[in-house]
Length: 612
Image (tube, rainbow, N blue to C red; front, top):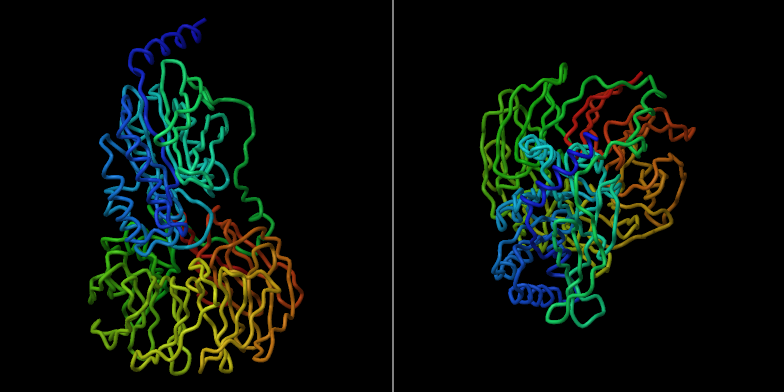
């Protein structure tokens, strides 16, 4: 009887507080998409919304642009700014995954990448979702989860919540459970999302979910969006054709007091694998307050890395405790390099930094014209690093002074270059692989795979070379061998569906590649034709993240998309050991010695693993 009474009381209060209202639900506008009509579709939607009466605000739930370029973001903003009612916006994977700024430009243009506001008794919470700069599963950023905790702490348990995200709250997000487990402790009425480009009723472990159609026309004369009506009893979804009709309701969600407590068992990541390989142990674990999307550096007993909010942290190798930290003004996706007693890296704030490794004090910084997402490599006192301003630079490692600058890139550099003999070799998100004279910066050659699709660029891979041949893998799923002197293609093979993870044996005779399903493949470093030596089923499942493979003391070591580090014996094809850190992408690891390594994950975990 008491439960019934409080249920009636809550519903009465809800009716008093949450008056009826309507809002527009627009998603997946993909400004800059190849068909060239996305801008027209969004313009038509904006004009249609302005023509309607009774709409209180607009929610735009991600994939606002096609590739997240500054030009696309600025164009989208110029159209959205024409809305005559309040609007709230979130990035999607297309806005961040290929972003030339690591998401900085989205925040600069729109002012935020997550939001919270109250409207007629309801609290709307919008959270960002990646991935950022690297290809991986969707991921609610670590800093967004930290932010969500603070928002929920200030929310009354009975206040109705509407949650907004680009991805569905399911395993297309590698940390879907972090949002769901929090939201189920509150009065979450429903969640809305985009990403799937269609209207679809969903259920997120009892939380009602609704996916909205893309704003794109997709074979029709015009695009479309949804109008959501909140009444005292229901949330009603209707599709709207700009300049046309609002269709009958296709989705209704009853509103009321939510109780998500039940006996159902839902999927959660299992760490049981760690009990099966006692020979590998975690020395310590540190959880940064933002994503870590780079490989930590190691120097003098310290582990040094940056995170996606721009903080650089140095941890004690012995204890995992913080030794020092340094703040930049943009996300860091650059893996730091060591030069003598300094650490060098790029930042989304447009600077290349050199810090004193012992103290974190600034040694020098060099300003560029855009974000610097690329990772540096240092040789003979020269730093080689690419940026997002169409330039690749060689700097004096002691002073930061420019030695030379190569101009003419048409996309950002986001990976680590290879220095091979007299050349520095790297890829960019402009379809090309470049080879520059490392002394002068002049172009020796550039190569591409003949695909017009920029998404197939060899931008993520760290190239390797042997006996005058450069080897790369790319999203076109080919392993390519390129003449290091001329840039001519020697051979290409898609016999194994490699993607962006590559390594080379210490003797230079074998290439290691990670396929997109279970297998590690070993190729000979041949000039004339591809030679597949071995295919090892490591049973890591589907995988598409860029994580370099290393040979160490007779084993191949690498990380995967689901937070596991593997060690394989290439001779016996046995798994020596594996260790699960969390459930997000493992970045390229850093070997410390024969028995230990540093690993970091997208969710901000940094660990040292040791093994017997």
